[in-house]
Picture 1: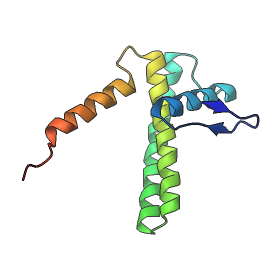
Picture 2: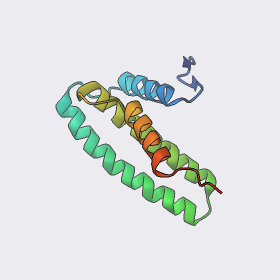
Picture 3: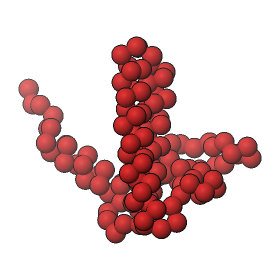
Picture 4: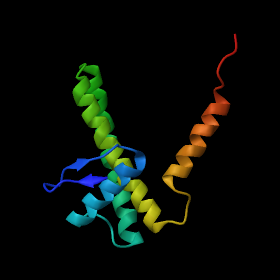
Length: 116
């Protein structure tokens, strides 16, 4: 990840890059929690924001505002990265990446490619 002088970012947009950018962004602004109790409260609030963003994405889709739909999906992805960072920092559980990998492997088994 490369940060530009104005705070902008040039990156490949891997999941790891998104999480690193989000944590850097949040820490510089004092948004990243400093303890588990604060993380617990913030995760709850962020989940509410995710619900709002999902509603906005649904409205954009119904109105066929596809650029706006992508913007709302981007907001949701950043909120997910924020929650994932807090879970990584304050909870002794597998990482989001590991859980996501397991879910993808499970889906490969659950939905095999149809044979003809």
